[in-house]
Image 1 (cartoon, rainbow, N blue to C red):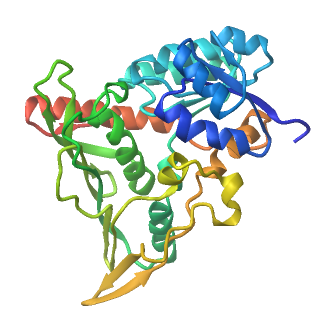
Image 2 (tube, rainbow, N blue to C red):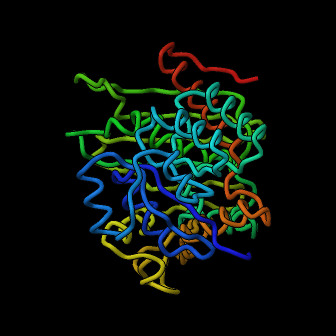
Length: 343
């Protein structure tokens, strides 16, 4: 790569401040220009945390020499900002949920293709330690053929509940849960969902369950909750030879929130503590499974290569359309109480 990709960040809330800025600041082949925000409070945080400039608009960022942008703003603003960036000729990383519905997702991906600018979605949970381990076990044949996949993001924080910026639990947690299920088992033909909504002013959903039947016959059962005081295992993946179970959550988020980064941690980045292991269970026997290193640090270097035309985007944006299609079906199923069949 002859020169680093000049990239900016839009938004400096929790996601921008902790999930994107620390990784952009140390990503090989990226030059982190600064942050687009109009909030005086956020501007002060950027100056204190990063010592980088702030910009009032995407257009101002582009005039400063940006080639690409990462968007980490409230869910309802994603599509308008992505489309604005595409019109400016900027490559785009968009946080999840990519879109509020599949139609706007599809239209925006098509728009990026017409403008020939790279577009990807920040599905960082594909590089979680526990998920990478599951994929390794499947590739090695340790589980046999996958028959059922159970996945959970569950916590007990009924007050204040899900942040409005995420658009509710189905969109926020569901975007990761469904994406991982599609990565493992491909297209979905049937969707059944149950959704609980809060009785406050926002009326956001705070507890969801999805049952997906994939075209290859695998069933994925997915839970997302802010009101579950007895969380289940993060994954339970059942195959014809064995099952893989792992509790807890990948530690990369906690590291970033605590102020660590791949630059400070070096080769230790993404390594889970010895006490957090998975289990491989078969014929009444349980074998410990050491978890693979988590690799969120690989996302932005891969995106930089895509901008330079030397590699694919880290997440195909059409995968985000597929995820949005399943989430649309889940919403329809929850409203009707019926299973929704996808063509």
